[in-house]
Length: 623
Image 1 (cartoon, helix red, strand yellow):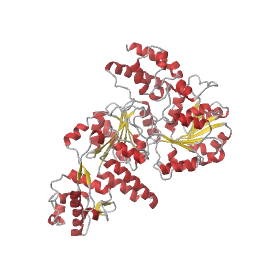
Image 2 (spheres, one colour):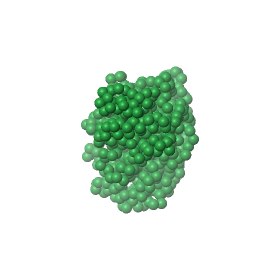
Image 3 (cartoon, helix red, strand yellow):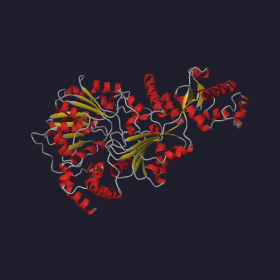
Image 4 (cartoon, helix red, strand yellow):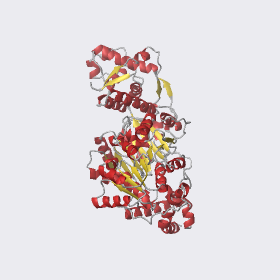
């Protein structure tokens, strides 16, 4: 990607302080949460672990200390696209930033290295592989270093969902430069992962700054999967027809098929997975970052570190394997603080598939047990009948009250005692095996329960069982809903090696004997499900900007068009010029002069000087 032309570099005065830099360079009125405390700690030379949700402002925590401490700040980042966009954004602000990665030719790389040696850079972004190479180590030895910032630090954890072996080798930074402060940053880490980050990357006495994991602007929503792709299409058409979004699917084939299906229905949908040619992946990524209303359909290979702030929805067609993964993936929505949705279609096949992946994987038994535990937590979140946000935050050790902005808060589901139905289902599984000396899959068990006289039922004589037809009063959907919960609670196992047949577990006995009760989330009637599909996209987050009227919306679209032209001219994503939230604020405030424009959040001195006259002219033209 071409580097954007940089404005005159910012010159820091002797009396520069964090708040003044925030206001003058970034154009924000004040710090959020623990940003100021982290910055003060790093400027003072201390090590820090920083956990903030995606969109919580982690980058400012090391970018401002990089300006206040003498020397070069080295930022370790795992993704080329993330480096490119962050460097482009910093250069738009007039800061001296550069990157070293495989996208540079030899001459450009030498130029960046010389700038670093001469002290002409404040921030240098490097991939861990580049930093750990002999040439990278040699370059750092020749520079005065201000700090090390290790982004996506959860990648160091061997037990995590995004382990990268080279992150463990970053321990060398502590050994070679013990006097240089280090900050490890991530948006998702449970307590064991936090401990591992500190142990491997930081000093033992490093301070931990853990912000709230809550993203109140995101609405969490889980729907029962019937025809997942059709449900996804309806969701996007009804609620996000002109929005940017990410759709996650488990397999590469599914990614390509879903992207093709959405494109065939007129959506600007693109596939992304590790099996595509690298140049095609890069083109699709650039379109996602640079254009509006692109829907990226991807495996989990996509997304870590993506800075695009205006992603309005993240959809899962397959259940993630852990809450950490789910939280990180859904956190890519609504980074600008405006309303967004996390939508997931979930069914029995998801439970079966994820358990199968764990059982057939090559990990050792300890890792499989941990993976099963993480999956159980994810299943509990998907099956929850109470506030999803409360459960999600509790997983990360944070207590909260019902949010009023998830599906369960907005339309509380009915909870019924399904013990008798569970006993019928378990008894049928038992009697079918007893009668035939073999086990059977879910479809056959449900046929027996509902009294369907199929060829297979008659061939095995199961029409003569005492349980034949005892569940005729319940639909196939109801039985699958119950079976999904029984599998989730380990009351029924699915034998993946033998055609997904069902087997009882030791815990099944408690239900059959009546010593364990089974509560079931009652399926919503079809009319209610249809109404839910047309619900508003999300409730307004605290402090969110008001809805635009028709007059202001026209100005907002004109501003977006102007921004797109500037972004193309500079070769940067549109949001690097200004995010949607800033353009919305301009459309609402309609500033009349540069001073009023400078008072809008996101308009710092450099961008006011660079773009102010053009913006004021556009506001004036729109009346």
